[in-house]
Length: 187
Image 1 (tube, one colour):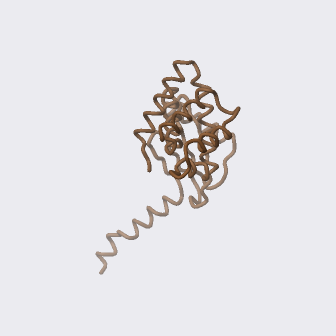
Image 2 (cartoon, one colour):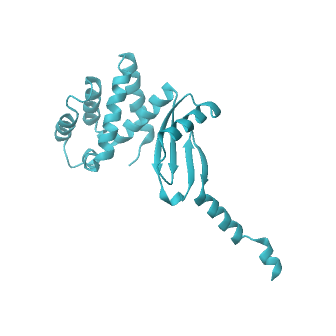
Image 3 (cartoon, helix red, strand yellow):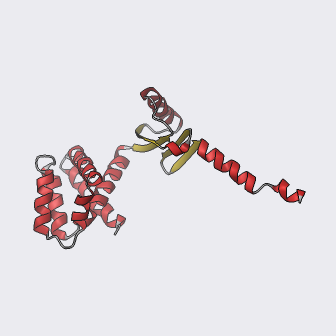
């Protein structure tokens, strides 16, 4: 069950504590690691959400996965989550932490979908264009290949969508043919 408000509160608490102890960058790196663990291992997420597995077993599994890979603050936070019975929302907390960190640092996530892979030169040109025209000083560009776009691109950033794909053009043309007012006048 998704609990974004609760996850946001836990993430905010961890950010505040990490900033207070001058470990914000280290904890951010830990959250990136935990996010990759959650994305790569569906079994880990299922294990954390399972009410059948007891807290001690979950604690030992999390310790085995994160041993020598996360800081003491992150390890203590994970143990606190398990002790409080909130380990099921760990993936949401990790994502909320990363989002709040990006907000604090002024980092904007940009997602670029194209029909074919693009070159590094083109990526840099797009980043430059976004930095200058959209006033996004720091961006994190993620590229995705979606062959169904046929051509063009789809750009998502700051709850904005720029769809310059051929697929969209074809759908627009299809709508025009379906609502063609001239066909009604002929009959």
